[in-house]
Image 1 (spheres, rainbow, N blue to C red):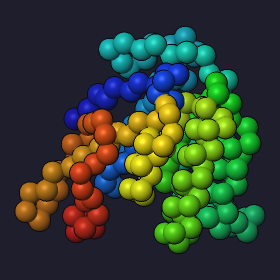
Image 2: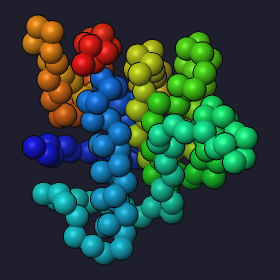
Image 3: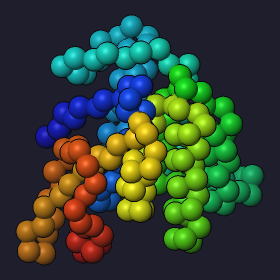
Length: 184
């Protein structure tokens, strides 16, 4: 069944750091938010109990991972090109969706790129941002930057199986489910 999830982005809460297991619903939550914003801007009804959507100049997305064989660009190069486009063109009136920035390279480099991108979006641009990541270290950003909050999607382990809750909850997750998801 579909799980309805709230979202709150405003001048005091401009970025959500979204964590949770693979298959937990992070990307769906982000896509759903962008679609509702787009539908509201064209004057359409939106699938929500209620919605207040302010003016947006653009919606930027960096979701998914694929290479571009025709242009000879690796998955990592595509990711960095799209990220650079967002960091150069987003404004404080933009909606930005960033999904797992840095996953196309080493863990340390990926974490550094994700941290720097999130920090730039928060400090320099101030865009309304959904930033999904598996780098748990990024959940520390709201402690040092204003207008950021952590949310997570959770799961419950039952012996050797895992059940995804698909409900967005406030705060950082209490544990990782990587091994449980890998066993599926």
